[in-house]
Image (cartoon, rainbow, N blue to C red; front, side, top):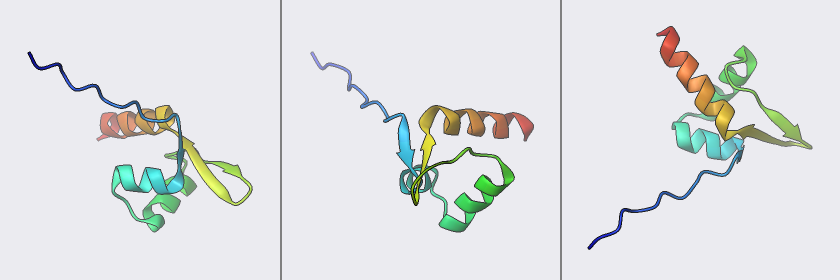
Length: 66
């Protein structure tokens, strides 16, 4: 019997590059979403990070508005 595939959990902390890859957006679009306050971005030195749960919440709220 085949067992169902287990999905690997997404890490809670995502780099800006991870977010851009997951959402399939450019750096300019990422910066626009950040400036507009659509996604919350945290800084650690020069690196930018987002929380996976906040990205999901932002996407859900964007869908609800549309």
